[in-house]
Length: 241
Image (cartoon, rainbow, N blue to C red):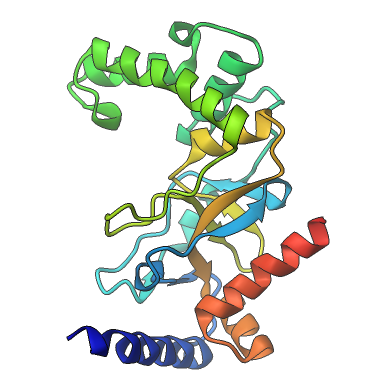
């Protein structure tokens, strides 16, 4: 049945294009891009073009075609400060921001970082943060960040893609209604460490796009959603260079 794969993918692209053109414009509606249809696809994005971070990702419907979130969730988008700048560790993203900054700019021990303290409290309350079940698991997890730092310092952030998984494991990016890029829930350590190491761009997975913006660029480029978004990312890269 492999001969059906390409026609089926092309048909899905046509359906998504039609949805993007016909969908009513709404500022809090997100169109999910099913990158799993192209399992090895990852795009390169300049770090300086990621202006926001999201406390949590938009909810993705089981159909993985459309995802919507309520107005109040728009408040979860915040201005992203450069990792070099101290910030209040008040949510999962800023906890990682401050942890990376303290460990690799101020050479603090990981025991003195907000992420270690946050994970330790989670263990004490019966939860398993990031799959850690014991204090020893947390210490191993935090120790692994040193190895990650060395790897990124030498090689940059390497594309991960799917690695036989259903979900793309690259740095997660969400595009808002103005076409601006925001950091989602996956790859925050990699992104922050890459910025500290002086790398200019990172491989990312465009996880979700605001429907209003997607409709606009699909009409502007007359391309399917995948290609329209790639065009938008490429345009930002060209501007950066």
